[in-house]
Amino acid sequence: MSTKPRVEAQPMAINIGIEEPDRREIAEGLSRLLADTFTLYLKTHNFHWNVTGPMFQTLHLMFEEQYNELWTANDLIAERIRALGVFAPATYKEFARLTSVAEEDGVPAATQMVRQLVEGHETAARTARSVINTAEKAGDAPTADLLTERLQVHEKTAWMLRSLLAEERPTNVAATAQGV
Image 1: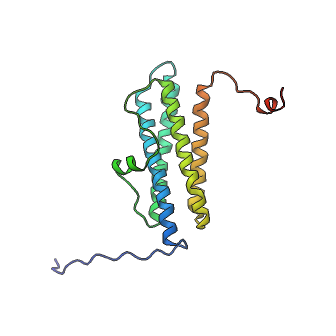
Image 2: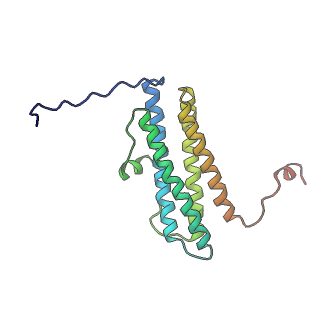
Image 3: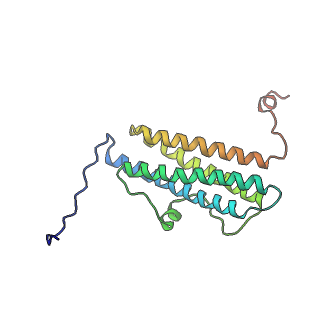
């Protein structure tokens, strides 16, 4: 066994065509999205475990599909942050500081669960949308693509959940605009 002191390797400079300040700004936005996604994952999994009522089977299965998708998204977002040369947040404390998704301390009724998840997905969509312009201006197509994909998922999921709360069909917007 060698008695020579170990020398820690120096990190290589990152030269992916995006300036360091831009990479940091993008990574900060992605960190907020990661915190929103992780918080929404936890909330969705909580609701999956604890939902009750007449819609139990439907919601239990829907929430499971959603939390699995969110779990996968967490990894994609964190790995993009790392590809930009920044460490991804990875503690409850960091996520709590960075997230905009409201946490739930108790076990609300099923319809309240659905409402909270709609709000959570809308929040995550707004966070993703707030970072896209920065990524595009910096020429960061992979991040812009990831954010576009996340927007599509969050907006569609919010729509699907919102449809469970609809009590009647919405009015035809075109007919309403024409006074019909």
